[in-house]
Amino acid sequence: MNSINPPHQVRVTEHWADLASAQRFADLRSPWLAIMAMRIGPVSEALLFDRVDDAEYRVTATYPPTAGPECSELEALAREAVYERRGLVSIPHEGGDNADEQSAGCHLAYPIMLGDFVHGAVAVALATDQQERINEAMRHLQWSLAWLRDFLQQKVIGTSGTGPAAMALEGIADMVGPKNFSEAAQTLALRLVTRFDLERVAIGFIKHGAVRIEAISNSASFGKRMTLVRLIEQAMDEAVDQERAILHPSPAIEDGDAISRAHQALRDETQCTALLTLPLMDDGNIVGAILCESVKEHGFAQRDIDALNAISAFAGPILTLRADQSRPLLSRLVRSLRRGTALLVGPRHLKAKLVLSLLVAAAVAVSVIETDYAITADASVDAAVRRAVVAPFDGFVLEALARAGDEVSSGDKVAALDDREHALEALFWQSERQQKLLEYDRAMGERDSGLLNVIRAQIEQADVRLGMIRSELEQAQLLAPIDGMIVSGDLSNSIGDAVTRGDVLFEIAPLEAYRLTLDVDESQIDQVEPGMTGRFLSSSLPGAPFEFSVAQITPIALPREGRTVFRVEADITGDAGNLRPGMKGIGKIAAFDAPLIWVWTRAFRDWWRMTLWSWLP
Image (cartoon, rainbow, N blue to C red; front, top):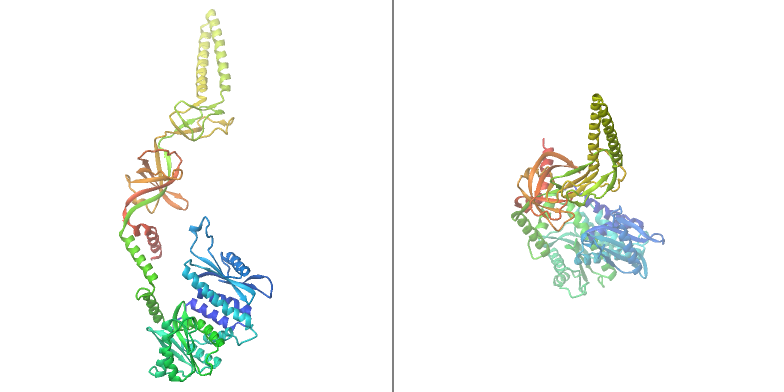
């Protein structure tokens, strides 16, 4: 019983079907680019840059269909490959100021050459910068373009159907059509026999470390104990073990000599003139083989070898996909588990084993090694004491001698208010008092006791008023009450402005008495206790941390930028140095020792608990 096919397998099948049914080159572009991108992997973006109706070069297909952020860079690289007529490799932002921040990856481009004519280029964004993967991707890109170039050269789409690429397309159509793996393999074997006039074609897949035949062209059902089947499987194993195509009795297709004893034994048994075995590849791994027998006098022509090579290159992934789709869900899970286990055992996949070993060692280390768990919070420096300089009376600003940030000493003049009105008023009352003194002397001569009492009261009133005015005249000179720094207040731009009695004009803080205020997140406030120590780093002095001790926790929650915090007050315990009120930075309260994994995952665990609590009934 087959399970439902995963979406990615359905998409791959659809691309192969579109490729097989393409009747024009315009219909071929998108499915070909998608298959190439999925096969070359890992690819984030890809594009086809070529001519349309002999017009200017432009992007004619992209993968994925919606252009991404790297599309413009890929187009520029493809255009450069067209003009330089060679393959190019580019590392995005290589050597820039932000090079260290860029994710690992590179861009590849290769031109589509039709003789001396450049038809266009293909560019891909490869999500790796490993040289081995880049070389492998470039080779696969060149091979894919060779297949596409063959279509263009022979005008296969809509005109001719005899080239290697056309034969490969027919084979793809045969494999995409059937619903299961066995039918696809059998259909392909029959197609190859008919198309290339062969005596027999066998298709085998690796099972339990050896190739087992899945389809033979001249027999829908075959016995596994037949001598012929055993010889065919041995010949396939011979090609798979050497990881190469074998043409017997001719020299090997690739450079060098191939061992072909099993092929000779099969040839002796079948009396055929030539044997050709082609490994089936999927994702860089050999998954099986196709063995072709010919009884023609001259064996295999080079044209037929090229076409069979093209077909086998596409047959590997398609048949693997069909095989996966035909397996039940449990079988797929077992197969995936075996693939994962294969990374851990055996002599291969040394890099994967090394990476896994490092990951395991890192997991053990972060679970055992303990570190100081520090509660991090935004912090600011405030003055422990602030003295205010206020306006003594209603008036106007006459001059400003200091402003915020200036250091002052006790008694230093920081500003002055306009006292001319008070001076005139003082003169008025002084003259008024002199007049009353003359009147008083006159009343004394007349011995008018009642008038004397009235004038005496008026003189006393003038004296009181003069005392008040003189006091205000003295207060018009605004003096610093203590030694310290002006932390707020600047009247330099307010000369002539009116002030009201009681207005705070300056605030002065002593230089050696500071208080640190930390905004601790509500999820960590329960871990803070008075007496805990920590370190504060100011944005203004990033190279000089200051020690502090928690003095008080304010039990009032405050909103801060979308989160809730509690205010914690702390005293600077060490040398305040160059600290100044208003400085901001980051404070870290040393709470307790905990494993690294606990410290790194604390926020996630808290979030998960709250999320789980909200979901549970």
